[in-house]
Image (cartoon, rainbow, N blue to C red):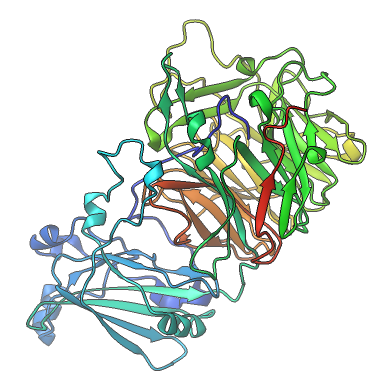
Length: 590
């Protein structure tokens, strides 16, 4: 993706630790236990409101008897513990590092952790003396205001944590494949009297993730120049951007590219993981360069690997290729260009903010799809997706390379005379645009008639950033009120490839969900979210053959606590398939 200045975070923010949403029936894994009893609020003494900040949802409620029942069998009344993570009915990939359980309980001073298994394996009993959630390590080079370092919210500061050791987690995973393991947390006071309780069911999928995730790791440091113009990242700090590779079975990510003297943006890979495409800014901030290179353990991007989008001049003065995507076979690239006689500010709505939570709004209002052939070195418009009356963008390939799915809306000027400036993301003063998703045959570059995708078009919302599942059955896309991608209200939806009823995905957080990518086997989706922090993190969700997904699973330790993750993409290679990437062309004057 290309922006007027290098876009570091495409950032979004959310504070979500206690979500309430309906549950899908995943009875094959969780059985009847997944449908927990809803706590009857009117029967709980008022002191519960003092002991817990937020009453638990039905998925978090403990098996707490009423006052009458307690009097009959003499059992103590147990206050509810809110288990915030993992959510009930979460599905973990095999081999992932142990998760950190999060809960809130103002009653207990120590806790028991009891783990029971549906396969009748002997239960596990552990004790936790209690440890509060802490802010992770920060990168001192990425603190824009040293007087205001990142900090936890009050709710997070009141959260207790427990992380199973490697042996315990291995046992949980081994005995929860396809059938739930129940983790019950019990709160006690100093005299060992039971005070509180909460439980959650989790399972392990038999489906491996099967590939590492390639992503960009960026600081969120918007800056205002002497002319008052806000940039997402000052030129002097561009070298702080890193590219990393993460195997979810390992405790940390591996940095493959750092200290780059210029900015790189959107990247994509061929299905076999042997070809990568990436936007690279060249000399004098030339944003018309695109690199297509073989994926190797030690990679080098050189002048011979560059595509110069602006060589033929047929697309006018705009040199930016937007949302470029390498074809499944690695032979072609599809991208958005502005069309004849248009400059950058004639085709994109761009606004930058000093608030690092959502520091940029960026989306095209004009543009056509063009395709590039690596064999011929030429690019040309794709008939059926090249109408100047529309903006056509976000083109992605079907896994067989026969179709391209893209977003389309009526073309308009990015700004009109006298339009008030937006002061924040989702400001009503933003230029309003709602995209619909369309499908068009590639037809060896001859294109065809675009067809709207039912369920992802003409619904009064902006439908954008589609990704097609590897089996060709599903499209996962972003839906929001306006624009695309990094929106505060963006939610992930899934719809059949041929069109149909679109379903809001269960993995969504309440604010900002986007930048998603399917694993090579199609069973996992990685996406970016701000569920816990103003700094974007990566999450996984499992998708079964019927398109049902599971609650979000955090990928821990992806970066420092004050750096953001974006553009996560599975690459079909081994965990060590990319060791390092060297860029030798950024400042090449030729």
